[in-house]
Image (cartoon, rainbow, N blue to C red):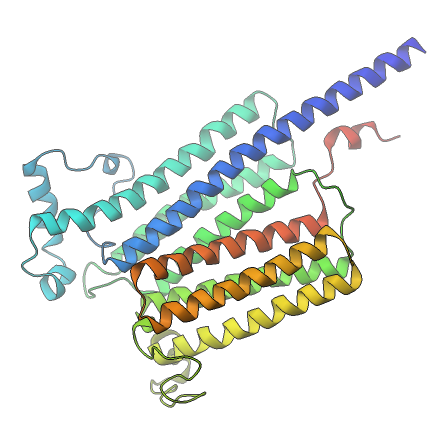
Length: 365
């Protein structure tokens, strides 16, 4: 009897310790999510202010230190004056104007470096002190590796605008943003897998629906990045008609035809619009389906809220387009896309429930 009591006490203590560890790890991951969202927002501002090519070298370590005196600023400015963007678009720019665009790009890179430390240092602490569950170790290593890859992709993107172009490749910009969103989604998925849920997981139908919806959000974000990369939102600023028609002409002006989906601003904007309608319809369908199968549950309420967020994002997108993409609205539209992605991933994880506790698995008969 005493032995059973002692065993139960040990098990209860282990469960309490695991719950505390999950709580602290979840707080850490939420902080990472805030910084990741900030990086995306500053990256959007960097793009919209034309600042992304102001730093013409990739110095992952030394580059964290900005110019500290006038001579260093002149040296940095001279490097910028060698690239096509300065020579064709910004010729005659003053040092003060250069500093304004420099700080946007520097801040973006600084935050990107900082989030690497924010992930790596606490990860090492939780791991070495035995607070990290076995299932989380490969997941967090994968996220850390994605972060390193993202740094390389970021420079690959910048390099595309240093020789023959005055801006970066829309293909590389879309890859960079999409990878950032994949990292954000992965962190959210792990964080919500450590949450405490009051309801049982949803059925497989609802789980699959939620997962497919996340994929649709990724596709729409990729399409939005192509719009940004081509400055496609600066033209055809009417809604619901585009260039005076529901289906405008000139969608297949480029040969071969498939290039239009990536290089023709009119087609890229048209596809982004149409896919937005599709995502909105699917969000409503998901809400109705979840209400039908799981009425009165938190799963249903989350699906309804997700549909409402998509509707609000559509309104922001239309307003941004009609007003010819002012920076504030453009950034709000991009930020809200991250909000919807995060909520969609959280909903998907919630339909599956939390990760099984290791103490429960270990004590099963």
